Length: 166
Ligand code: MG
Image 1 (spheres, rainbow, N blue to C red):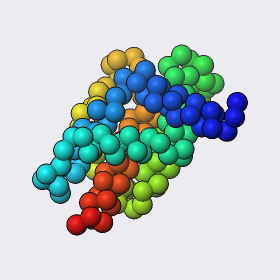
Image 2 (image 1 turned 135 degrees about the vertical axis):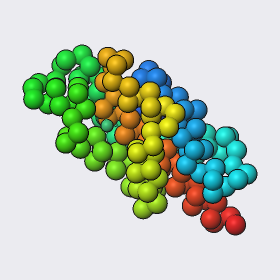
Image 3 (image 1 turned 30 degrees about the horizontal axis):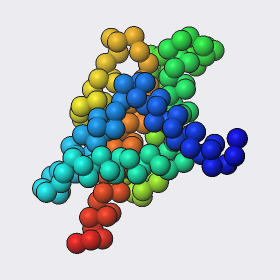
Image 4 (image 1 turned 90 degrees about the vertical axis):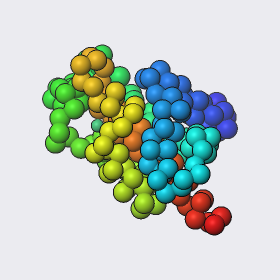
């Protein structure tokens, strides 16, 4: 596989896995809107979608998406070893590695991303509420943090762009 094909394959797979796990770009864009509309009253959904889309072209972010979703899937299928399996399956509060992985996403667009991430992680609006619903039998221990982090990163990107054009 050539470098370019491999790169495209990573991005394509990251986007496909998000979809397969029930997360659309629209869902993430709605979180961006939730975070940014109070600062940008003219904000349009298309801008939110565009910023999420741009964030997903970054290799660091694709790597985090693939790694996190892979671990969620293996946990769901019971294919990890104990004690890690139970820890991830029950989304143990003291585990914390899901958040560390999400920080690698938030980090890409600088420090305001952390504030945004902390805020939606606490409020859990939209898709985050569904991903945190433990009654579904699905495991989204990593995915909830990844989705929140992509939204936070896209919000930072949007905020930086807005500041530079004003
Ligand atoms: Mg989590």
